[in-house]
Length: 225
Length: 83
Image (tube, rainbow over all chains, first blue to last red; front, side, top):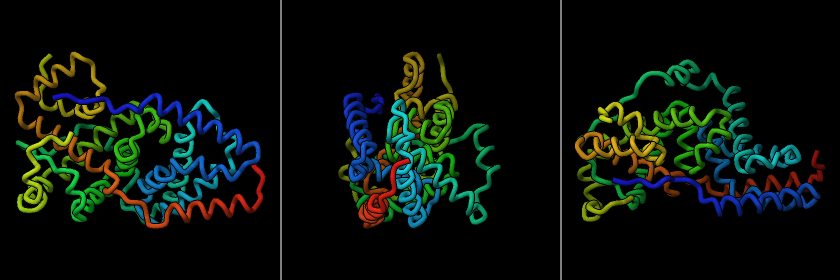
């Protein structure tokens, strides 16, 4: 059994950084229209970051818009030692958290719960075998909803790291910088988040003998990794 | 190095990241080769991560990008100077 590191490609990262640096220089020089181009590659990440915290489409979109406006207003304070994308996502996280604090009374999740879940061990769903659920199964709304519900059910601190690392595919260091925590904290939360997802979803997906698995049985023998 | 199931679960996320030392990786793989439970936990976790990373799982709201750029354009047009 082998795995490949999921690190970002250095060449692509360097080229994106150079592109961003040039755009930022020109925007600060007065070409403000170029801000559209600067944020376009990251607008999806901004939405996911706000959605991971707010869990509501309209609120997430409002926070995403406010994030981009704040980034424009504060672009002069961006320091090139961090990546623009990381800086932008940290604004998004802060914007969403500020809105959530304002609205905290409506949330069931308590601060205590978020803090205490950092300690102790966590057990996955122990199963004896696994038949791969192929990507084509995502054509089914039922599966997409199961995945979305599972993520929505995670406590906020786990949802954030999962959305940034595993959905948006930020690397560990970027995820840590965007959330304002150490890489060690990201790794600990990521372990919990991933095992929680496995615990919720593995029994559900595994029991669909006549559903998802039945539909794709002919393709299930191959590896999807 | 001999690992039990709990040790493997504790390392499973770093293992998926490719972020474990060679000796530990070898011990995990030795365990996985003989433990159906842990192999299934790893396979199911990786499978779930592949599914959630797919663009179809989380779709942006229809018109999100257009509304975002329209709002941004309003701000740019308002002529506010960068501070």
